[in-house]
Amino acid sequence: MQREQLINHSISIIRSNQHPRGGYIASPLFPPYAYSWLRDGTFIANAMDRVGQTESAALFYKWVAGVLANKRSRVDILLQKHANKEWIDRSEFLGTRYHLDGRDDVSEWGHFQLDGYGAWLWGLTEHIKITGNRALLKELRESIEITVDYLMTFWHYPNFDCWEEFPDYVHPATLACVYGGLKALGELEQRSELLEKASMVKDFILRHCVYEGRFVKSVHCINEIWKPALTGVDASLLWLALPFGVCEVNDPVMLKTVEHIESELKHEGIQRYVDDRYYGGGEWLLLTAWYGWYQKELGNHQEAQRCLEWIMSKADELGRLPEQVPDQLREPSAYTEWLAKCGEPALPLLWSHAMFLVLSDSLD
Ligand code: BGC
Image (cartoon, rainbow, N blue to C red):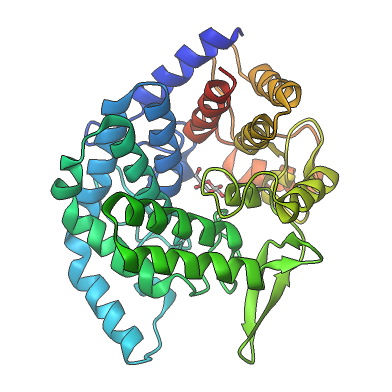
């Protein structure tokens, strides 16, 4: 499939899978993904903004605000418990994914994930910068402040990572989303308390999440000392540079992190992390797009173009992109187990289409 054709398909797949109220379903044909995630949704909305589909993005940001608007009392209780140093169970925190009609997901699946909330603030701010629609700040104020209070207080709490795993640790990629959200809004509205918190989050990442000169997947606190918990890399560490800017693309720590991503997780596409067992740990299209985007920003146009072509080669005849492909499995038996449990990996995955659009746009 040609690039222009896949761009059009991607936009139309995203549009036609956006609920009239604004949520984007993660994947319409993979039942476990019949929700709208704040994380996927924000990156999808941001891709739509980049390709000029700003009404779609606006609808998503407004939908999230609608979902969060009635969470004030819940967040106030959490803040009170935090102030009183009371134990808070993970299930009490805000959810990570919502039904498309806005209801909370009350399934057993892990909920406490901060990355989507940080990403949402960042994406909304980007949207306002792109469209100039500052009136949105007023319109969505209640939900923006609920999110700000929530992140400012709980940013350092252990929570599920962006792959919905390892809830006992703190993850630099999650912190990058929190940093990105607070910094972007802080700059837009010139709010010093947000900028100070963002800089505290950045300092935390640089002080506690670097091991042997590169970033690690996760850290934890033992006897009041922060230490690496998972010392390997995770491809989501690319988010520290793009789009959140915790460090520059050519920062030595980032460069070393990417060297490790290349030696541990790169074949033709990019895998999530070494011990990944989900569908055997295949190559993820959205991460390959992220890596290509990073290479483009570093000045390696050719490698970025190769990533784009690899992603395009994975589209099916209807122009649909999957979440991952089982070309280079880390654990083939786990692929078979997941196949028996849930069927083929998600196809189409809206987030894959979104990141294809972002990479393609960066190459223009
Ligand atoms: C991924 C999440 C994603 C969800 C929906 C999960 O398998 O780990 O990052 O939000 O799928 O796409």
